[in-house]
Image (tube, rainbow, N blue to C red; front, side, top):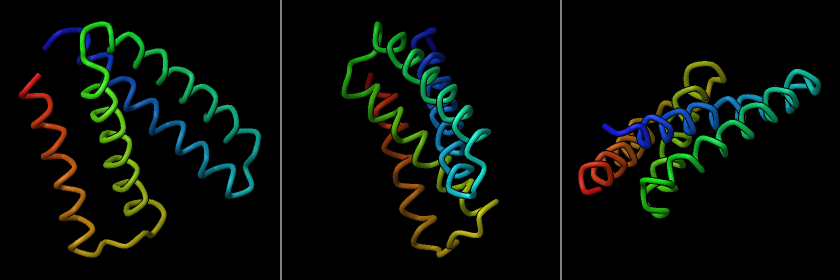
Length: 106
């Protein structure tokens, strides 16, 4: 794994922090949520830019959004009481399979 993939993983993790900031804002915690959003998304985009120095745009963006989607879905199920319907979990697993497939082909 090259450093580009590590940067992409970091971008995905910080994107999730930005989304958690959105959730905090919607819960009435505007200051803490706004700071988390700004730091999370700003850092995520910086890492994404670094990752795209060695990973094609389409692959990098698909993996970046896939990480955010899967982690956001899991966090929603674990901490915000969102649906744990088996089909939801199955379709989330398909996203993971797609992301892994893109990694293997790149």
